Length: 77
Image 1 (cartoon, rainbow, N blue to C red):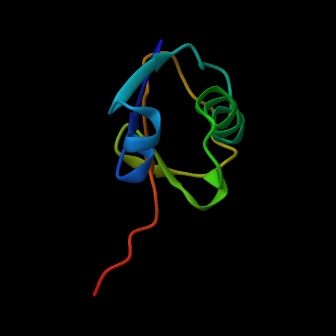
Image 2 (cartoon, one colour; image 1 turned 60 degrees about the vertical axis):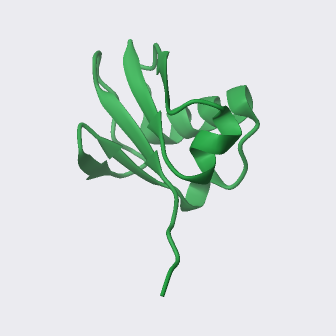
């Protein structure tokens, strides 16, 4: 199992700050698709993803026990 963390509006949309899912062996792009379908999230292509606190590309593969963070773009001034 992997822990998936959600930040900002994604946390609000999912209704919790983290979930556990079995996504080992899947790419970041596949995990985005699974999370999008499971929680009805839109536009995950603009979300940054970190695996074990390091930013990851869509092609990186999740390993058993990884912590995955979905970090939406932030605006401010």
